Image (cartoon, rainbow, N blue to C red; front, side, top):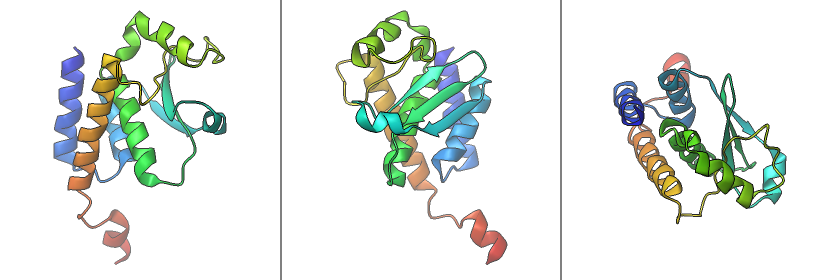
Length: 153
């Protein structure tokens, strides 16, 4: 099932020609059948993570550390999308893992969160590779005229 979600996501990317990570978030929401909400959270600026995803009953919530860099923001979101589409939240070991990384996070709010840079974990490597591939898809379509230019010249 996971491979089907991921493959469907990549096929949409090829067909739709995403030029922005927000396009990919919208497509991922459709593919998983659950809204994916992205929020910058100031509290993460002081934490050892760049972002994490909480899988809640009615949506996935991607929380990222504030950053002025669009590229870094896109990569962190892509990484977290990798966790969602590969359904890493379904693996119970991940809940224990994030409690070790950030023990103060309320358990009722966060079922699973991932720390970038801890690549001894297979889920982290998989999410990182997913973010790399998403970045390549987006870069590959950046030379298309933006919708803004198409409408306003």
